[in-house]
Image 1 (cartoon, helix red, strand yellow):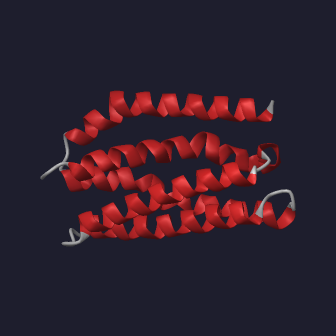
Image 2 (cartoon, rainbow, N blue to C red):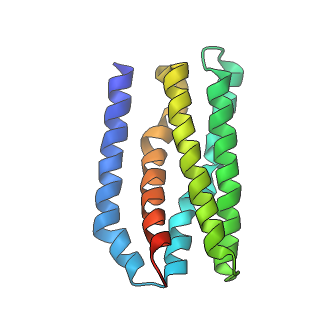
Length: 158
């Protein structure tokens, strides 16, 4: 039953974020300069330190696979660092700003793909995530839509 509730909550959050993005956020972003829109889309990734919660989960509960915790925590931390670099580069209009945004989006997307694979293969016991349950059902859908729209805006020409 836990996994049913988990995937239902995740799916509903994905739908709600998708609708909000399509109806409000993307039309708003299209009215601004491309670098500024990309900067705004990167903001959620600057908070990926939230993924470090996985280390605390695995440290105190042997049923949580350490391999999942390491991949989740360090992948999110690396993505956060690249997001912060891209935010700074875009704000100060560095020449490499768009390249930094591409780096963040690619690293974050790969982190997501690897994280999903490890979650499935290690069979993370969802019910043991406790308060950590909140992150994949509420924050992860936001990150997915952010990646999707980042790719779209990064592929546009100025």
